[in-house]
Image (cartoon, rainbow, N blue to C red; front, top):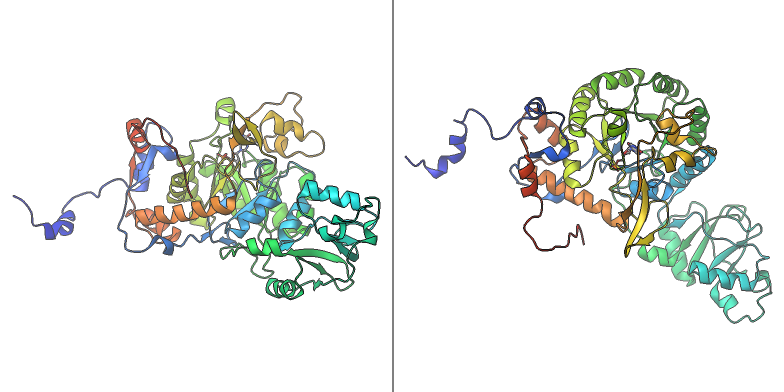
Length: 521
Ligand code: IMP
């Protein structure tokens, strides 16, 4: 008998089981071992809304909400101030690494907190004694030609003039001091000026650069017309509720010296600290959490890393405001191989989040995020956000210079447990060794590798690609927000399915002679 087509959905209700598995069955029945993101898929749902309406707001910690669930990893080839500024502008947050001195790290935090879109906070400045020849040479190396002149040649010094290419171009005596040729009739903006007013001043004065000075005439920053023309809006920007400054995170270890380091970071305006350890369930971390909670009750703490409920329970009880999940899943990581310790990331994320979410403690899935699908899967398994190292490595905002090898434009990306990173710390910092409890080791045991990744362009394009892709992915699943995803996974209406090795093969590009994989325009 052929059934009436108009009753197809009603007929579905006569089936004993829904298609696919609920999340608990997915995890429980993976009796062949732990699950990774590639081992399963999420089944599609009903689309009755546009992808652009999908809301990606999430809690990073108990008290911090982000408009995009993206966190950049505290690694010395991933997050310094430039990455942290742009991650925050694009709705996520950057965690500044600690493989440097406390003062250097605090300075980076300060730069993020002081950042104002459109203002150049650390312009190249010259002193009045610099020669015309030197300014001409600076033009060659830096590519721009206008420099504010301050009495001490630094930002913060008294603004005494501005030198442009017109001032030096036809001046033949290269030994003249620029104080003889610089423009001293200055159009300036006062500290606190907003971008629109600064812009108007530039337009009406027909100048290319507007130095911003404090009430004593000291140089604070600069607005540049060329930058304004390139300037874009960042409607998702992660900002402190009160100060409207960008949010900034930074990592510290758990040895005593890290308490002094943290004091400097807090002084610089830090919003959230990551306690950076490959295994967060240590008495050092428990003590550190308690000390931070007593000393800086307002500071949010992301504790970790953990992969089991037992580890999570200790950190939650000590006062963690969020947990970081992952051990051995990172793209540069050899921990599982060398230490025999760790857990496949899918299973780790599910087990820890299922426990921690009951206490209102958000979790960040850290390591092994290689594409948008992995982000969706981490969120579906209960994470609130993902932390990315390798996926962001090679972008323009990461530290380090590009180099060429085999005709490819590359950047270095290395594990914090690689010998390279651990040896760098032997001078005056301790990030890598303390992360792996190796401060006093004579023989270093690597838990990471050092390598290179291909140029990915700027995160100003790449992160919006992740954002839009994630919206489309949730649309396919039939959920309108990350909150909705959580609810519908928990009540069993979002369904999952295992992927065999051949299913994984089928799900990738196959059968082509050649192809180009462009991820976004
Ligand atoms: P990825 O995003 O897969 O590249 O993984 C990045 C994550 O790997 C970081 O956020 C750390 O948790 C972790 N990680 C960083 N360096 C090392 C290392 O040397 N060994 C093991 N794990 C590392």
